[in-house]
Image (cartoon, rainbow, N blue to C red):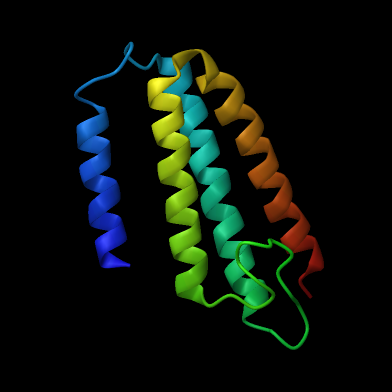
Length: 116
């Protein structure tokens, strides 16, 4: 987990060195929206997995009953990939981040709806 965080931080610094164009204020806000949604989804998934006898994960990458570290690593990889794609494909930033954020918040809402 610690190595993944270090890798993501190094990647962010490297990405900031060479970009097709700077991020606009709106794109940064969209990125915040996406990453907030991703974090809320991760947290709600973790809370559901605290009761493995009652709930199961439907994400095929994670399996039926992922551990907290599996969820964190998966979320970190998704965050890194989205950041990488958006950094080098400026035209796709707003659609990817906005639609992705809506999907993440939708998944989190679904998770919270399932909880007691």
